[in-house]
Structure formats: structure tokens, C-alpha cells
Length: 120
Image (cartoon, rainbow, N blue to C red; front, side, top):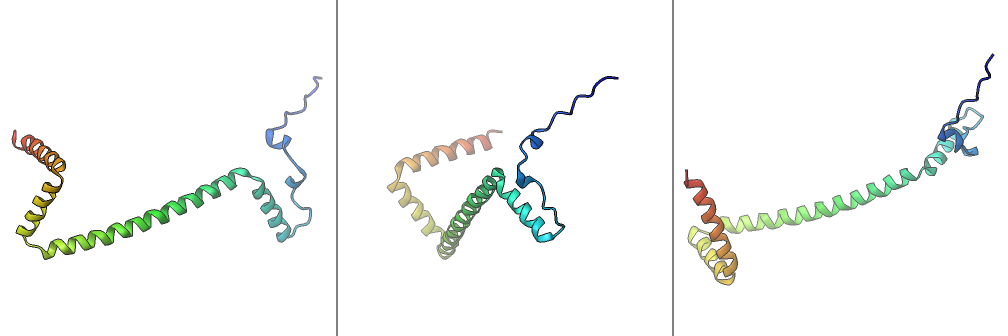
């Protein structure tokens, strides 16, 4: 009869520590305490916790920025509703006088797109 070799231990079995064994008594608080210690030992849980904290901070930052932009857009729309077409055109002309490079770039872009649109 052939001799049986003992089965290879898995990496989880090799790394077992005394805290890996659950408490002998069948009490819920002891079991939860044991599980809590096991979870605290896992570094990837801590890394995930830090990642979630960073994501929460970024979300709060984005929400603040969204509310600022929304408030600013509401104010701009309110101002535009108050103006007539002549005042809007005058504002556009003043912008082009202050920023001739932007005006030239906008005119070139509009010319390109209008040319593409009406070419066919």
C-alpha cells in the first residue's frame, strides 16, 4: 500500500495566528469581538477606509463647487433676462475690444463651423 503524503497547507493556514481561532464559548459578544480583531488586522480594509474618506472629501469639494457655479449661473441668467438685445451686443463688442485675441479666435471658429454647416 502506497503511503499518503500530507496535503499541502494553503497560505491562509500557514499564516494562522492565535487570534485566528474563534472563541471556544458560544457567546455573541465574544464572537463579535473576535471578528472585530480579525477585521482590524486586515490592512486592505484600512486602505479602503482611507480611500472612502478621500472620496467623501472630494465629493464634498465637488458639491461646494457645483453650488457656487449654480449660484453664479443663476445670477448671470437673471442679468441676461434683464437686458435687451442691444445691451447684449454692446457687451460682446466691449469684450472683443478688451480681448482682441479671443475675438479673433471666436470669429475664426464660428467661420469654420458655419462654413462646414452651409457647404453641403
